[in-house]
Length: 273
Image (cartoon, rainbow, N blue to C red; front, side, top):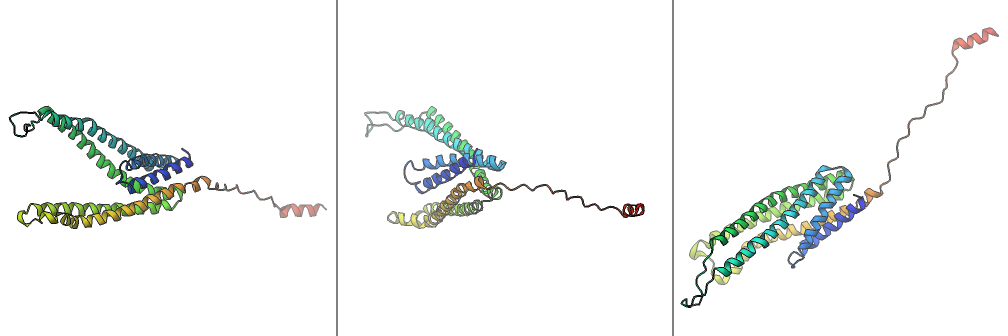
């Protein structure tokens, strides 16, 4: 793969990841991140081929595997769980004139339960594999930036890697705070009369989730900066393509012979005269 192709794929890919992250709350905009991840994966595979780095190729290949598994989860949910749930909800309601509402209590069929459980099992297994691979990919992503900085001489890769580390650390802290908030809310709601009255429920939830929300926002901002630095790093690969070739060292020249006649030869010539 040519350097210019890798430069465009990586730069555009990280820009698409950035757009998908910023517009994640807008419907269908998050799909842009999926396209960006594919472009970034191909770019790292290409860069690994150029600089002869196996780890970069491994990161790109595993990123593509993550994309495929994500598609599998969505397909399973749409093809198995959603139709099964609709069939269950429709077939479990029977009209009876004797019931006050005209409907009888839902009767869930055993085969429908088996279908739902089977679909959930498939989704759970694939999601677990996806989670493990995502952690591995995140680690390889950071390492790949530092290796790219060493092998291409582009220091921006190193700064992008450092920024990605900061984003991951802050994100983990936010996740821990979020889990602690959920546990705290669960303990309070199960306390009975001590629970906050319903009219203050929103304020209660906001106060509990506010620390996690602040940390997540900070992590998102740092991740945006990291994507920008990664995109700039790939666009700077043009320096790698246009770098002048190093001049080869010429072999040392053989000095001219400066051999002088020996003393014996000079003496013999003088004697003959």
